[in-house]
Amino acid sequence: MNNRLEKLRQLLIENNCNACLIAGRANTIYFSGFTGTTSLLLVSIDKAWLIVDFRYTIQAREQVYEGIEVIEIKKSFYSTLNEIVNNNSIDIIGFEGQALTVSEYNRIKEKLTRAKKLVRFDSQIDWIRSIKDSDEIERIQQAVLLGDKVFEHIIKFIKPGMKETEVAAELEYTMKKLGAKGPSFESIIAAGHRSAMCHGTATDNIIKNGDTVVLDFGVIYRNYCSDMTRTIFIGEPKKELARIYDIVKKAQQAALDGIKSGMSGYDADKIARDIIAENGYEEAFGHSLGHGVGLEIHEEPRLSEKSEDILKDGMVFSVEPGIYVEGLGGVRIEDMVVLVDGKIRNFTTSPKEMIII
Ligand SMILES: [Mn+2]
Image (tube, rainbow, N blue to C red; front, top):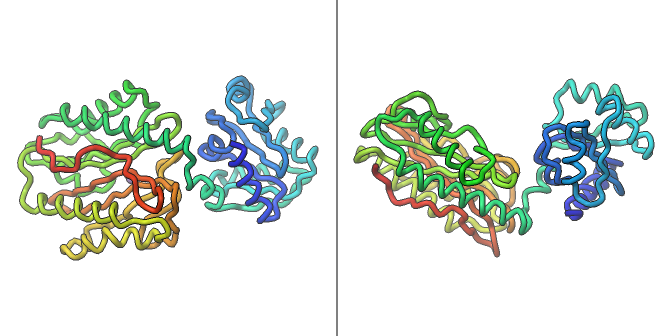
C-alpha cells in the first residue's frame, strides 16, 4: 500500500508542496486504510500522520497502513495539525479542493502559524485512484456479483401493485443480508412515465401492468461500490419501448465490444451515442455513457461528450446508455467493466434479454 503514498508524494514534488492534507473519505481510505468518518491525513515527503479524535483512536491504530502514525487530537483537529506542521518544517501544503468547505479552508488557514501557502488540487489526487490494483479489482468484482444476486432476487419479488419504495426497501434489505454495508447511492426505481426520469429515485408511485421499470442501484462491499441498471417490463411492452430497448442494448453491446485502452472518454461515449442517433433518438440520450467507479460511486475517468480522459488498463467504469421519452418511458442498461489487456472485461453478469414480469 506504500506504493499509493509514493504516487501521492510524486504529485507533491511535482507541485512544489512539502505535504498534502487529505480530508475526503475516499482518499483517506485509499491512502491510509482508515474508514472512520472524521480524520485528517497529513502526508509529507517522508512521513504521514492520521489525526483522529478519541472516538477513533483504537480503530485507526488497527486500520492504518504501515508508515502512518496515528495522532489523537489534544485541543482540536486544527491545532494538532498546526503542531505537526510546525514540528516538521512544512511550509507549503496541498489540499483536495472538493473535500474542504470554504469555512474549513478558512479555519485551517487562520490556524496555521508557519505554513501560509495552501495549494489546491482539483482532481489530480483522485486520478491516482483511477487505476485499480488487484486487491481493488477483487473487491469490486465481489461488489458487482453481490449486486447481480440482489437483482436476481428482486425480479422474482417485484409485482404490479407494489410501490417503488417497497421494491427499494426489499433491494436494500437483500443487499445487507448478502453482506453489503448498504446501497452505494439512493436506489432508483422508476416505473411507468417516471422511467423517463434518468434519476427517478423510488417514490410511492405504484407499479402497474404495462409499466416499464428502471432499476438502477449499487452496493458498498468492503468499501467498494457497485453500480448496475436493468430495465424490465410489467406485461408486454408498448411497441416503441420494445424498439427502444433493442436500440439501447445494441448501443451498449457496441460500446462493450469497441472500447479499448488508449481511447478517449469522448470516443468511447461516441460509439453508443452514434447508434442511438442513427435510430432517431439523438436528443433522448442526455447523459454520459459512463463514469469511473471505486471507493466512490462517481469518480475518474468520465466517458462523455466532453471528456478528454484517456482510458487505460486497470480503469473500472460503467457503460450505461439510455433513451428517455417524456410521457412514454425510458430504458437504460448499465454494466460495470474493467480494462484488461487493452479491452473490456465485464463484471456484470445479470441478463440483458428483455425481462417481462
Ligand atoms: Mn452509473
